Amino acid sequence: MALVGKIAAVTGAGKGIGQALTETLLKNGAKVALLDVNEAAGKSLAEALGKQYGQDKVLFINCNVESDEQMKAAFQKIIETFEAIDIFCNNAGILNETQWEKTISINLMGVIRGAYLALEHMNKLTGGRGGVILNTASMAGLGPLLSCPAYTASKHGVVGFTRAMGAASAASGYGVRFNALCPGFVQTDLFNNIQGNLGQFSHLRDAAQLLIDKMGTMTASEVVECVIELLTDETKNGEVFYVYPQGTSYVTFPSMVK
Ligand SMILES: NC(=O)C1=CN([C@@H]2O[C@H](COP(=O)(O)OP(=O)(O)OC[C@H]3O[C@@H](n4cnc5c(N)ncnc54)[C@H](O)[C@@H]3O)[C@@H](O)[C@H]2O)C=CC1
Ligand SMILES: CCCCC/C=C\C=C\C(=O)C/C=C\C/C=C\CCCC(=O)O
Image (cartoon, rainbow, N blue to C red; front, top):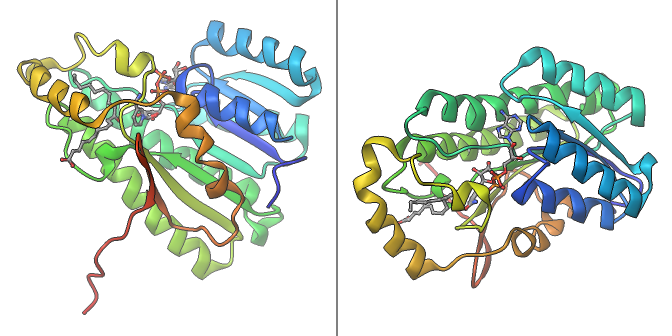
C-alpha cells in the first residue's frame, strides 16, 4: 500500500512522535488530519506544514481522545474534508502516575475509542476502503517500567488490544490491519518533563535513569523512519514492532494454545 494519495489521521499530532508521524506521512504523499488537545501546537504545526506541502493536504482538529463526542465529530470532519480515511494513528499519550486514571483513560481507553470509531469508517464490510490502524504502545507494553506501573499497564493493554483486533479483523474480513509500535525511550516532552509525574514512585527515578543510561534514547524522527514498513506492507497485521536505538524487531509471543 503506497502512501501517495492516502488519507491519514494522527492523534497527539502536535508534538513529539505524533509530529514526526505527521511529517513523514506528508513527505510520502499522504494527506493528514492532525488531532490534538493542544490547539496552539497543533494549529501552528498544521500552518507550517500547509505552507510546505499545500493547505489542501493538512487539517487541524482540536480534539481530546478522552471525549467520544469530540472524536466522533473529528471523524465527521475528516470525511467531509478528505472523503475517506485509510490510515489512523492512535498516538496521543501521557505518562502521569499521580493521575493514573487519566493515564489509563488517554493511553488505553482513547486508543480503543479511536480504533472503534476509525473502523466504522474504514471497514470494507460497511462501505469503507480498508487500511491500517497504528497504535503507539511502548517498550513499556512489553516489559515493566518500574517507576511507572499504571503507564506500563496502559501500554500492555494497547499491545493486547492491537493483537486481538488484528486477529478479529482478519477473521471478519474488515480489510483493516492493526499494528502496534513499541519504541524505547524517545526525546520528547513526555520524556523530558517527567519531573513530578512519578507520584508515589518518585524514589525509583534513579533506577529508571540507570535503565535509560543503559538503553540509550532516540529522536522521534529516528523512531518514525522505521514505521513506514508497518504502514505500507500489507502482510503486516497484528504485529508488535519494537524500535530501540540499535535496531528494530517484530516481537514474538508464546502460543497459549497447546
Ligand atoms: N517519549 C517516549 O519515550 C515514548 C513515548 N511513547 C508513546 O508515544 C506517544 C507519543 O508520546 P510523545 O510524543 O513522547 O509525547 P509528547 O508529550 O511529546 O506528545 C504527545 C502529544 O499528545 C497530545 N495529547 C495528550 N493528551 C491528549 C489527549 N487527551 N487528546 C489528544 N491529544 C493529546 C499532546 O498535546 C501532545 O501534542 C504516547 O502514546 C507515548 O506513550 C512510547 C514510547 C516511548
Ligand atoms: C526517569 C523516569 C522514567 C522516565 C520515562 C520517560 C518516558 C518513558 C516512556 C516510555 O514509553 C517507556 C519507554 C521505554 C522503557 C520501557 C520499559 C522498560 C522495560 C525493561 C524490561 O523489560 O526490563
